Image 1 (tube, rainbow, N blue to C red):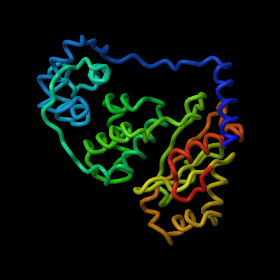
Image 2 (cartoon, rainbow, N blue to C red; image 1 turned 30 degrees about the vertical axis):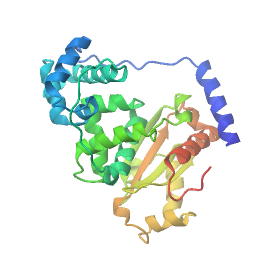
Image 3 (spheres, rainbow, N blue to C red; image 1 turned 180 degrees about the vertical axis):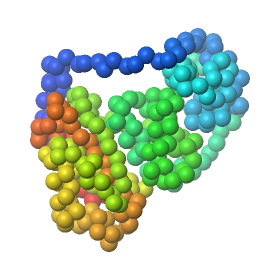
Length: 295
């Protein structure tokens, strides 16, 4: 823990000293519409069918009705920014207590069967894009990406339940961002691939962090100065008995195991061994992989 705290302090100092760069975003084909609070309230009142704003966000039928009330054609990909802005404004009004529309219905559902899938899927999207949970749930493209990642883990899982589980995880503070990931610009590329018939050409000879996971959650997290070399060692005979059992098929089938890589760019602090280990340690602490010793 002392090493982790020292690394975080160093990272914070570095991030303050280096000016941040903004990546220019291509302009939307159709400029995002603006909405007044009254317009959002009226659209919600006309479309929520008695459910809460959170339920509207996760339920695609309710969301589409809400967009229609605002005059947004959600089937048109050019309206993505308008859809995102409208949904975010709805959540903002709810969080500030200014939505002021009565809810009369709720759904009580057992989310435990999809909770681990939802956590892994949303963390993958968050790591990849460095966005907020609200953005993932409100941006149509990120919503689709969330479901795509979830179906890699659990094919045909219901999208509404995945999104609802994400909201639940946030409410119980299980998705708090890792501190070490917030205090520096890591500049990582996140890649995922099935362990079965692994494509070794997709694994770079670069520094990074690697995560093994399956439907039950995270299995093992490690770091390496050369990802391909380190992973080759695991396949040749991992020092970790639990992970070795998975990779050799002696434990749960490797057919369900996914390898996730966080590859650091040339100017990333993750190129330094101490910083990379701090990144790894924080992921182990927060994601609690089954076969790791706790840092």
